[in-house]
Image (cartoon, rainbow, N blue to C red; front, side):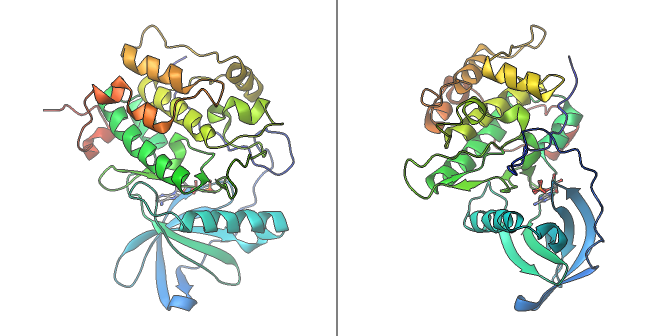
Length: 320
Ligand code: ADP
């Protein structure tokens, strides 16, 4: 029962049922060593690979002044359908509209004959998922630090009519100072009319809110991110997601039944257990607001560190 969380593929909208993809991926040719943004007359040198997502590869690049960025590369051959193009344009439109210290900054977007490139703020310290694997779980003060920044970013998105819909440890990056940077707007949605509801089943199994799966007639809205925030909080302090089990169907059943527990051998505060329980309220209308979450005594009566030292990658910081 002590296995660290495994990364899960997000459930992608395209008509298929919500199951992880099984098709083998063909590796597209690498982008050029020197990537040129013709419209801005800027050249980037590819210096390393940072990671690979559902449809993009992400490289570390540097410009002529040695400024480093992340460069997300999508091959045009993967954009043959109108649906795929619409999705990428939506991601770009939403991501470039956001400007917040805890959201990965979108720098530029350009293309050549083979690829579409997006340059992004570089997050030197990887994702919270990578860090949790090494640490197994975080102390409550560290978790408060990450949660305050995550909730700040989420509140900003919501006031700008954006639902992220795929908040999870693998999409929460850390900059060189260990500050949170929310990234990957590939499943984000813009609410263009007040009261509008979204109906696409998407997210990542462990983090999906019950209304996305079980209230498809009514649809869902901003509260799905609040649910994911509850899942993230539990995962940070316990070390694995609350509804995790062997197969996706069983995860969905546990989400439907709101079935999770705090393992008896993990000493976590009563306050954090209560906050998780409130946040994982099945009815989205009854779920606390982001303001109510940060007003909970777990935040207001606990220590929030001013920063996290990079030594926290390998062991709990000793706050002296
Ligand atoms: P996808 O949308 O295809 O899932 P992501 O945006 O999640 O792609 O990126 C895939 C991987 O690339 C991430 O898991 C991470 O390892 C790396 N990555 C993405 N953005 C950055 C960034 N700004 N800085 C550093 N690494 C990044």
